[in-house]
Length: 78
Image 1: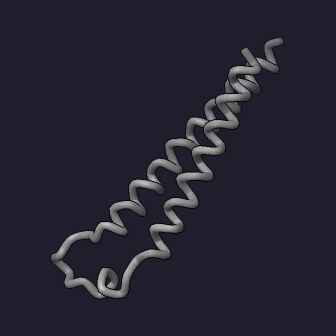
Image 2: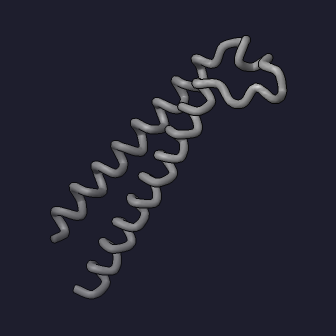
């Protein structure tokens, strides 16, 4: 079981890194027009992608933390 959890932890960490990099790339691709958009025009496509990637990052980080907690509990019991 520990092997499965370690593999899941590695995958969660890789997914976190991927979402972080994608979010940063989306941030860097923000155009000047998007930054100077009028107040009521809503978020641009770049901002929507940034928000989606950063929310994914938070979810993957939470999964990684839960897996670490399970590994620590399993190690403490056995």
